[in-house]
Image (cartoon, rainbow, N blue to C red; front, side, top):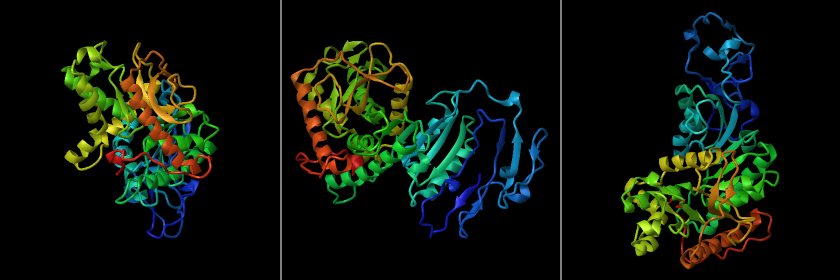
Length: 438
């Protein structure tokens, strides 16, 4: 695999010609040319896993020959004529998936699930477009090398860049994981501003170059407000297409209910996380079911539900950090997979899933123009509808209202990033940010 070796003095953004292809698109092409890229500058070199003196004679049925490019190595100097019978006609049309923060721990788990066919299916070829920063570019090259070495037949293309306008080009799914972690002494308003600026820029890039119906899942925290900022900066993309990831919270809630009830977690359904991805989130045990029976009829200890259960879910990330020494990565990747599959697979009858989505037109009386986690159902076409057959009591309404007030305050604090004037940060007293944001 040829990858660009950047010198320490490299300061400019990558140009389109510097995006690094891992493999060429297969579906729909009869002839595929694989070649190394020209030098980006005098200080740029090319490395490859096949040395020039190791190149063998092309196998029968293929035509090999040196290209006009002076710097190509091994397999990247060969041209293949693909026979018609070799084309995998049963495969679907290739889809493009963009991932930001692609050199991070969450992506390290997620990318290989995507490439394996676990997410979109065993007959769905994909192209991965990976966004990093100047600081992470070398690590991103390592990610591309590992993907290459994994020999995933469905992975037809991989490219890397530090320019969102390149990575988001024609993207049909955008998984936005990259965000700045909260540093020592950083105020919550500061983190909202720093990451909000990142997501404002990414929203503009998506608006300019992504597929008009791109589905966007925001993982970087604070994810609800980051998703709102992103969608506000992408007016050409339906606001309904933006999601803030609260599926990990839902999975954690299902786990705790299953443990308490003494059942396996697949018996837990209709679990909703309401509100913000923070410690004001509301794990809804009123509408949840265990083996089809309302949770409150199965778990009679209602004090446990209102106090211990709720706090366990809200603070699960912190408990994991204390044990593991770092925030969750593998389980977050699994929850991203679950979130995607919930949109591309029909929701089982009577069940639903949680996602942070745009509140305009919601049937619950929640303030509009927010990204708020609510119960959703999907027909498996990538779209969703909000669930209407839910019940509320005073306890649930009070908790939802508290999370709503927090998100309204976060919105005011980022008004300058969503075109609503000067920011006013009147965040509620107390620090409700999740440990992963620290």
